[in-house]
Figure 1 (cartoon, rainbow over the protein chains, first blue to last red):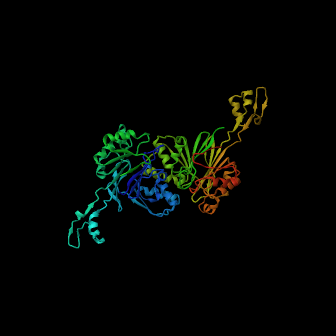
Figure 2: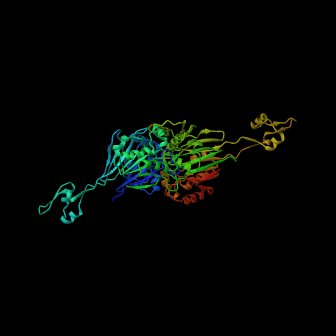
Figure 3: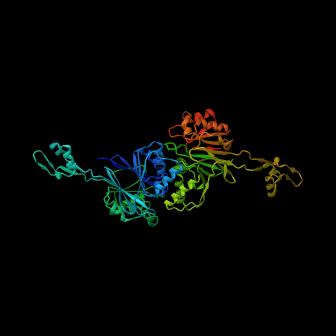
Length: 304
Length: 304
């Protein structure tokens, strides 16, 4: 199976600690790398965990709190210094472009590579990137400032022709194209092979949803339903549910409830407050409500 | 002797490496802490080296290349989150205020503590801060964008009255004030003690100059003459002198020549290019021209 995996560069929230850097995830989908959020120190974490920064062409920024984007300028400058020429696409709240441009201007920098900025649309789910391998959506989250979640859904590999049929009939390229487009096959003897008999659809489509930061919000369920892996922030334990609500964050229990209601396969919690040295209490709390939960740690890899 | 020391948080230039973070120095003068430059990851380095960030009240930013200031917003946000109420003074190129304000605005943050911004004056040496313990000056450097060096000069402790005289004559408070103001002392018997006989001036004034980034420039010599410790950038070896010049940087040899011409006591070189895993060649080159040279390493402490 082609790779679909996640590397967590930072699992903490707000302020870094000795063991937790701030939000940044690298998603590998069929060897294409996507960076979600880019907190301070992200470029150091990328190097530390052996990720080739030059292979990242798409960066998704959820919102403009510092713990989600302050490493971006450093990453952009370093790419420039190392002679990058390939485009870098950034999908982010519109105001980030102002922040980037102002800093490029005052450092008198003209980047050597094209920086292509894609402004996230407010209030709606939208397809922001489509490649041969993956569809990527942004959708609105409820936080103190405008914030988006992201959904990475592997493309169905389309129709796969049965090996036995190919061995038997040896169809030419045009015939294969026709079958992949859904057509039947008629051989030289006039024998009809119905499409559904000689093909299989790849239904095992994997998906990853990233929801950080957000208050407990059931409105996101339609956006994340049935995902293979849901990353949901779990900043606090449920004994601080009132504070979580005030700050538009979620507790571990609440993240687990969302995971259950959205019928996801696995839940990954993270964005832990710096007050928790150890994530076990958060993990235990979430598992009471959604057993198939894991807790993010810096450097952790998750295979989907 | 009261402390006057330096802790190097980052000794590299442009892009961080596995062993070198980017520019940031903490100067401790009589237990007051001053931060010079604040590159990405500075707040992590502060914690790593056991420095109390809450004790920093003055931050000096040399120029607006990312490797000298991109950690500032993170430090400011974290101070806010940790409930800081004491003022933070920032001495920096005027445009930094725009960059700070834009990011505070888009993160919808009103800092809990006063941020007091002091714009550095172009083209002239100026006294930017005077405390009871230290005078701090900014002076112009020649770099690709406006850039400043900083000079920290310990205050002369003024006149110190000899212990033997105090034990012998036990002068009252008014008499002590008079002596400290330069007056002679006349005891009850009419005996005159000349001021120069019963006092000592503290002439051992220590000073630290920070020059990064700069091209080789003898115009800075008057600003740094006779300093106890000069930090001078030495981005490259002298076999790359032409490239250093093009990029308005200095070689190790050139930094040493400046140190000699300025008659400083000790030279500290740093801001090393990421191409040098090991600073020894840079150090050896500098020592040929100025033997009392040391090379910066992350976490290094230097006592003046």
